Amino acid sequence: MKLNEEKFTIPVGDKTVSSIRTSTDKDPVFTFVYAPGAGSNINDPFGEYLSSHLPAVGASLVRFQFPYMDAGRRGPDRPALLEETWRQIINSFRPKEGKLVIGGRSMGGRIASQVVAQGIQVDALALFAYPLHPPSNRSAIRDEHLKDIIVPTIFCSGSRDNFATPEELTGVSNNMTDAKFHELDGADHGFSVLKRSGRTREDVWKEALDITVVWMKDILVSAC
Image 1: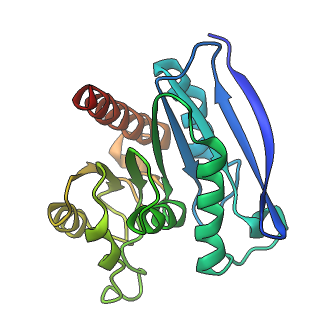
Image 2 (image 1 turned 120 degrees about the vertical axis):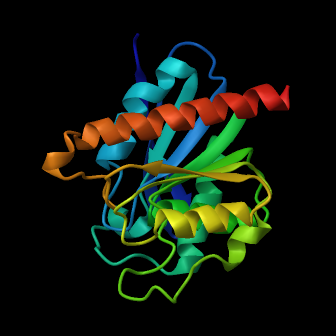
């Protein structure tokens, strides 16, 4: 299967963001837009893994980085700019046909959830390693906006993730309109696993991909 890779520069106010779309020669059944976590960029390893595998199941995969990464800075932009970046990316890559699924890892997914809660139109939301709270402050829960999300949503996080326990994310998903949680056994916030588990990080990536693909196909079937 031949993959086509296109690079774009998207303006966001007086700043720009880099993005890459990976697809095949066939018309995609759905478009998936992915954002990395706060410390990563357009070359985020999990995003690259998705771009290598999702097109095989009929998706066009778009990944991007936020303005601060484009500018070579380490500290994330202010929330308003992060949200505006997501809106511009969604509007730039919204497909004329087929479903639009958005999401990301950690901060990338959290900001995606905020713009969906604010009402931007998408068909589904995939949140990997959602940072429900800082590891050092479990009382600072970032869940108030999640109840406003009405599109199908999946949380996919590790059992060793110190930003959210499986029990916490199960509780959050149960309080949403249409959400589910999938636990990645043994994985931490970065999807790494202990050597004694007998698994590798790529095994975790594959599990996250497989469960997300099944979930996406269920959405497509139910929408018909």
